[in-house]
Image (tube, rainbow over all chains, first blue to last red; front, side, top):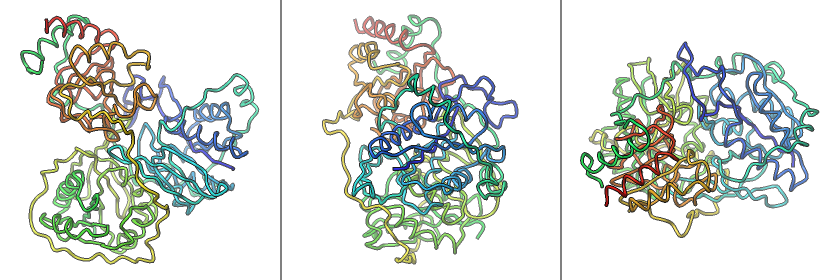
Length: 264
Length: 327
């Protein structure tokens, strides 16, 4: 099967985050970027299905030049080639604008299956894959915890996570877009051989014009949402922070839990 | 109309979910801001009683599509039922509960009807057309203020726990049938069934004390200080999602929107940053203690007591202090 996997490069949420001076987003200087967590699982699932069915994975990503590093990593773990939607006009898109651009890029080729992560760890709209499916006119499933191919790879039995520990099991006809939940598999690491091979693999680039789109249809211009500001949450009612070294703080905490909160 | 607000309710076998009531309250508040009255929409089969329950709210109407074809949720069926009516009525906002069902179809519905998409809001402020919405970004570490631009309907989903369920304004609303083009209701997946995850499930909801651990613990082989503290406190061990996804603890220990919702008298969160998906599962706890090396971690916003530090240093000290206090 020929499989497309859409990945996003996001800031590492574990890193020390700073708000940019204009207050509208994070300061990206010195900020470490990684492949979005659920997208890594989508990539791994794509590679496994391609290996099982004798196919290949083409990886797509949208973003500035730094995104090439994420694409290179995907090539190093086994993707055959990559497409980089690289143009300043693509920046700042919401799920609708980004989904529109990715769908236009995917339509230039023909795929049996498109995989994405379920949600980005930065803006977290959680809808890009579904929007892609809408443009392609394919069924989609969001929050996928299991994929089994059926009917000679013309359908898939898909397990989807729901709330309160219940999974939905359904069958979708392929081609489809499956939006993968983190935890589905164990993503592989790149081997030295894979890293060397990746250097020779193609990363094609595409602009809005290449995709038959107007710059006003993509990125911030093509979006209905505008992020006005970001901020760390106010300290709510405010935790009492217990000071001192670990021992002093722990002792003070136990005293508070006994005498003030009365839960011990 | 430019100020109409609809609210699409979610139910399970005719039972209106708690988050749906929260969403009704949010929609009422939004409509009041725009100078209108919210209208509810209910899809399903055999939902007459649920509709009557919703009709005891201060709403302009409760629109009900009660068809066998809508018995099982699929995106194709729900989008088919809603798309043409949203397009022709063109309400300013359609508000949804932010659930895994909603996220599954809301983005595609927005794309199908040419509406805007604003997922997972926790608050809004402002008046008339100039609203500023709040939603989590960076896995809940930051909050963004978002503005909607351009013309036309916007689909909004409301985060669980952001608006009070008992905040619904009571009243009396007429129940009206919602016209649905059944030819457009096309299931796009064949539902084979629903399965319970787990089996031998640990029931954390009955625990009086929970020591919950997050990504900060660093690995399955680094659990000893967590186990020691849990033993000293007589506590159950819980975890946030990354711990489960990494296989460091079994899935029946997961607390949060895709795990268990707990409210013990004492909740110790160690190495948990506090993504909103985790917070909704534990913020009802009586007393919350947060231990995290990042002083900016959102877990401290819901905690009563906090210690800023590495859990591998703090937990052993805390275990000692608990043992000493208990004698």
